[in-house]
Length: 609
Ligand code: F6R
Image (tube, rainbow, N blue to C red; front, top):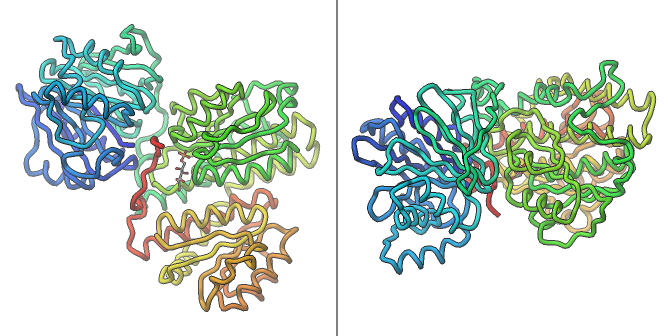
């Protein structure tokens, strides 16, 4: 999992490559490098660690040249080191390659190449590509790269540059994302759109099994057999500043504050003008088709999996269809019981998570229809699923997912109502009440955001503890899981989410004087039982902060502090509940001096198993 960029044009490549890489650091950041060609010299500069190190080095000694490629790495094969940083070259130094993905048969290829006398300097799978290009070079870079990729198995997005044909870049997409940016007298390649957005809005999103040749005057796309073809230009409508921090100290805080807008955008166009019904124009499903689904499998990872847990409760409650929620890395290796009446739903912010994508493909091979919920229009998941509901959260840069989760929930609510309408399990006023409540959510989210200063205070106090517990029942428990994940991920504090009623079966032993406990209290039917569980932890000395509905005077009698969220329907509570938990994690991370947007050991998009 890495980010790659490329530039060919009339401007100095260094600045453009570094700027592009800075927008891709969310994909990995353990080393960075660029290769730039100028007057028969192919210079490679790489450093271990963040891109900043490379920027500082090149600041004093800029590399000349108007064509180049760059890379920001998240180590898979070979530890983070300068030798393992990309770009990688061959024995002659005439060919350079940047790569995102994994070449599964690299060991066999490496042995073959070493037997022929090629000398390797890194432990990476990528280095086989540059040596293969050298080995198979026919005098024509394009046909050589075509021959090289026939020998490789795995996932790869590649950028290739050669001293022998220094006017062009070759881009290849096979199971890893890649886009081409079209400029005037210049062209770009990148793993993701934000990297090229400062320069152009006209983009070619390469499809699975496509490649392209870029020169300063044009771009030609091909399939992996070398057949040329045309391609539609996708015009990016979102703003470059949408991908910037917008005045916030961290992307995460900006993205938390964007949630009222993201939720509005995800609802837009999906509710009838009279505000009484849901429409999903992207799903041209008939009622007969909907009625034939007798089971749903939701498959996802991490935060998206947590959204799926909420989806299960809501779909079952509204549409009365049984739902199983599965972690993609488990589901893909099971032999799940499905029938042709099972709908498989995958949820993925990035649309590139390897396990989720594999689960999608397995499901299609078994003959199941796959519906995807994703935030990235041109992503692999979006393109391969049978149907897609896009969440309009906009680019999510912070590694910790926030606005993606709330918009995934909105997509799940809309879909649940859509199913329920078709099945007739909710109708009339009950239906209109739900739709109205959905429309009120952006305003309620803004009200929750106003409580940020109080949450900051609590987070500062909690951050000196090495543990925290998040408790809830029903949907409150599903949100507690997400709260605990967020807390662990960025504050590095051990956190556990527990169904409140399960505590006394073991975990209660961990409750000691002053240990922080966050208790969620929005499921009205379970309120009294949850209060009893709170009393159990209070009796053992815990410091309890409750999150409860505005107007609930009762809770404060049983806890140390209450944070209030505006009242909505119980099954919509996750939307307003998760925001204080996101803020709690954020401020705890800041209090601990952590790198909030780039937590250690993690990367934004997990495109390898
Ligand atoms: C946590 C987080 C991850 C992702 C997971 C799935 O904050 O962001 O747990 O949710 O890696 O990613 P997507 O949704 O892109 O498939």
